[in-house]
Image (cartoon, rainbow, N blue to C red; front, side, top):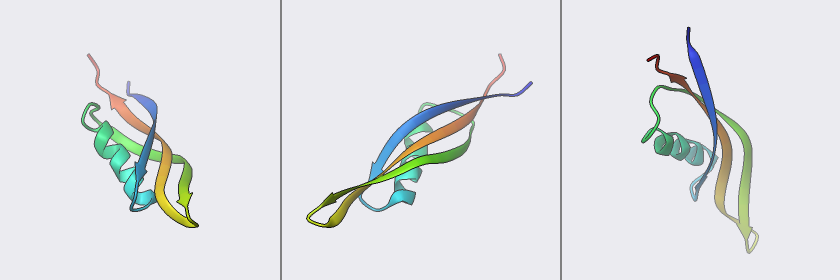
Length: 68
């Protein structure tokens, strides 16, 4: 039986939302195996002097748990 676990993470980037999501997966993959998907739950941007200075995402990352 396959078991899939979901964790929620926050990631940021100065480049854009897609880069923030990519960074989330890259960082999580350092400690989690078998990542299957990412669902971006929320997007936010920081604004200074009427310009976007950073992009952030709150995302859920799912991964398959290995059977023991």
